[in-house]
Length: 165
Image (cartoon, rainbow, N blue to C red; front, top):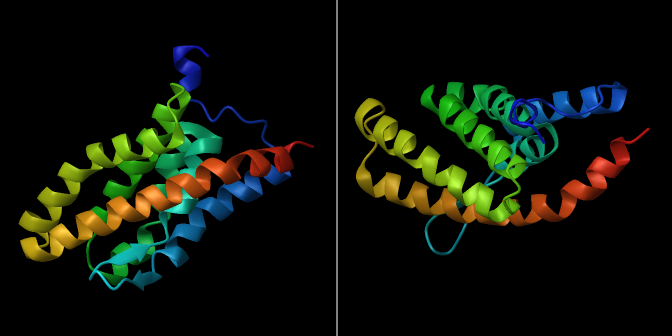
């Protein structure tokens, strides 16, 4: 795959691929409202699965758009517009790293490492969240990202196969 192709959507656009892409851009807005509390004091987030699948199928642009559009509602509800950029960063780099043939789980965790400074700086300095909350959030997102990276890794192949006309 050439350098320019790594940034392309690299799909044959048809009704199925367009519908799925729109769905993967909207779905994180709904999933972002769901958090599962754990006995360890942090919450598992669900929005990442849609962003990761968009990144795996549609590449960096697909991941970026899913993270961006898919975070609008949660950002509005939480009065934290920086969530939108953070999730766009996450989706973009997952898509990019996968295009460079990294394993999905490694790609997700590397993308999270790139997203993390944005999250810490904006949440602490701009949103004024306490460090104790940010630390729990970092752990919750790391575990959630790992869970959804594994799920995305094993579900993306059947999803891609269903897109073939």
